[in-house]
Length: 114
Image 1: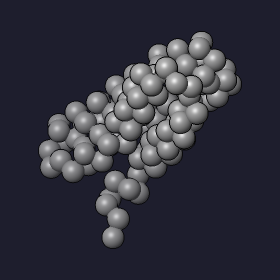
Image 2: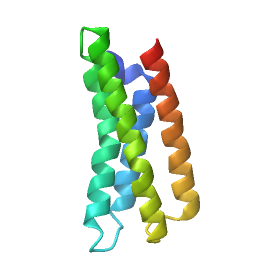
Image 3: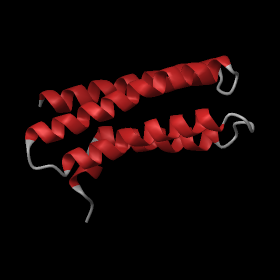
Image 4: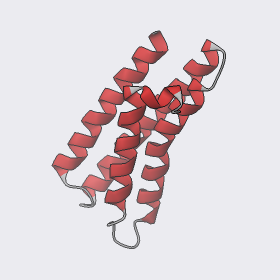
């Protein structure tokens, strides 16, 4: 039986982008560990905080975890920008990831306002 949060579209999108970025960062050349590590931690934090927030009984607690997830999505943006500047990620790929992160943020805002 799946956990209820596993049915949320925002959770699925967060796991998908975390998986894709994790795979992408595996190809980063040596010496860029700090970028891959920080990006992977931030992007995984989105899905993890959605899951944790859904485990809370009080609405205020849930909203707080959704805010943290949204903050983690924002954290990914400058890291992606730096990866793009260092030619670790193509410009179009960085743009596409940012658009997906923006969509996740909008969905999280919807959850907070629900």
